[in-house]
Image (cartoon, rainbow, N blue to C red; front, side):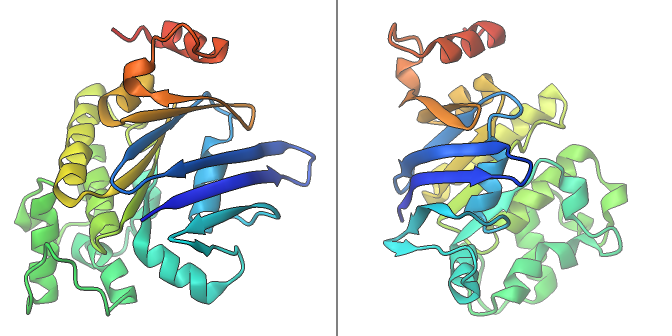
Length: 255
């Protein structure tokens, strides 16, 4: 699995330049963090990578194939391999559906997929129960509805649903931002464990340098739609770090 972004730019009708010639690559099995303050272009990048927004300038190449924003057939195949965890888990779960139905929605859409971590010949309910177990939730939650769950539980459901297709790339857009500190740590630990078990590639988008430093091996820093810095986590305090990166580090007070 390889994801390569070259010269990607995005401008909105109001003349706002959300992304300016973004280029980077994500090797297989690596966890890469993208950090920056609000308005830096992080979420726009995530939505483009998921095919939720179009782009006219630049290219996205996945496994050697260019992902055109309006090619539905190619996008469908791409989305089978690339899944996303959103910041607001509440808005991504249908309030009228029990948890098990939301959990199995991706597998229902891609019936040809048989994840290696799910046993063969399982009923739908048994698949849902196994997915819950993987993210540390009790089996008896499958018949509950979203309003009956805490924020942390709903985010775990979102993670379980995202990994149900056994994607080779998982894009996380501020997945812990709306959670309290204790639950944030639990979610980060869960993602780290899943990444080790499955060798899944993760693109972790966040304003939280602490979270990125804990989870990721490499960090990309964005400011005003530009990539201003890129480095391995162990080089975070290198004297050649960009002034903007140094300002983020000071504001975060990373030990």
